[in-house]
Image 1: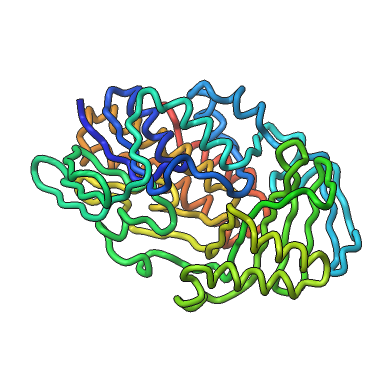
Image 2 (image 1 turned 90 degrees about the vertical axis):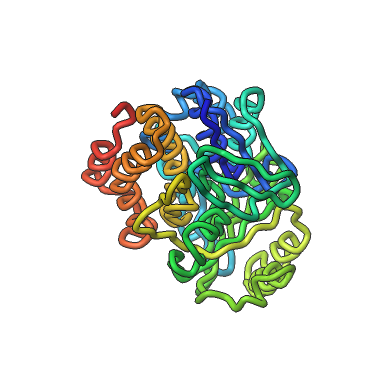
Length: 369
């Protein structure tokens, strides 16, 4: 039985582990967090990604925890409503769509619960070194003992450690898209009931949506900026930077700034894409944001992760574990789909894919081929 180490316990890694286990591999997932990560924005499961979730037997469970918005209001910088919709929201698109919007943490929890009995999870640890020879990949960990695996997959996000160790510095592959996104939680002090609010004020803006039975708010705050200096991105400096940005806004700035200051799940990172000529080297390959992050601007990061995990596992199974054949097939099958979805953030930012693009993606990506 071939062994596979997957770095990253978010969505892509555990989904890949599920499919590898189904195909007779022995997957291990290493995640630096002490457990499944909480927090994060609402994510969309769309198109062929719905097929992947369905094949895992999780579609009904995901549907039960989906968001249930009635619509949204669009506000001016002073908080006055200038438009509203009961047909669509900016976070999920049309409300009558078959797509499913769920909180990222809920999807992570569902997949983890579905896989933990058959998959080895190493929480609270991370990879520090990788060395490949004819016998496999020798892996050093920050906490646990060194081990050797037949395959290694980096599913560890935009700032992938596996990518850095195998392919080089992040700066070679990351393309900044001119803005940052911060996500954090707050009590529902606005008393919103299944209703979103969106506001833009100059180069800043936010979306607010109620979750957890309208007991909590999930706030997504964005601001335009060139790459921030290293010292601003370290420690608590980035949180303070966001707090100050929020405090300067006219409507609800003071309360939103205080919520960001106190939030236990505060997150902020650049809107960026990862673009690489190849996602694989030797026995190591990359999956999801680690290899082809489309940025949240595309609305397709979760779908790429789900579909990429299915395709990679399928290619390995068809090649009887021969990584050279499998990785080449994986890249051929996924690259057209990745290219189309990354273009959603750069060529058609904020808009849906054309029918032609969607059809092309479905043809390029056959889950059964």
